Image (cartoon, rainbow, N blue to C red; front, side):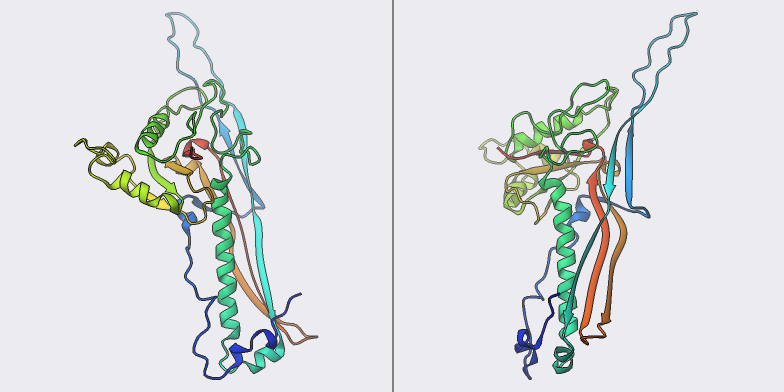
Length: 304
């Protein structure tokens, strides 16, 4: 077990030292809340099962028997909670020699910083791995793909057939595709785009596309339809933990059945002395899971 000793904290022990840096940086906090619907859990895991509805109702001829249809359970999405934990220890002598009694406070703040960072990375990784077949959802496909299987609607896509960079035309095509989503029995779903999620590298492009009154990059006096029609009512958000610099994601208004974060146990901290060494030990832990259920909650492109 690594222990923080006096030799590692020479400057901390110097009288008159006004400030240390490295643990006091600001951090991007709770960016996952812009993407995931948060729910609580009291079990080791949570499951959500897709139940197909009925197809279109047929016309019944006079005197004929009514036709029966059946709804069935299809695939199940499982959210398995992880325990995320980190600890540190400070020697008894280091604690005794700290003139300002700030050692534990500083390192406890650093511990909280690490825990918060890990949570943001785990949340962003759902999108970072959204196109990878190594991370399938309940239907056996990645979150974003061109061939989500359905019961009676063939394969459906929440990804362009040809990968595209973020642009006015790629967003328009994506919105048209979202408007064509159907359920597993091929009945249209009333779903619309609501928010664009991008890495920091696309922030200027997104600002020009979504916030300009006129179309970007043209000499015509055409209106910016994406803006005037309010196609992205919640605008765009930057996630600083996305790793693909040209991938973009469109969240739909099916957020209650889509991307979710289950909180099994909130962040808990504790400290205790070690009898044999006199060292003081500090620990932080939290239990949660990130994942997705219905792929219709999102449309995305990995970039050209």
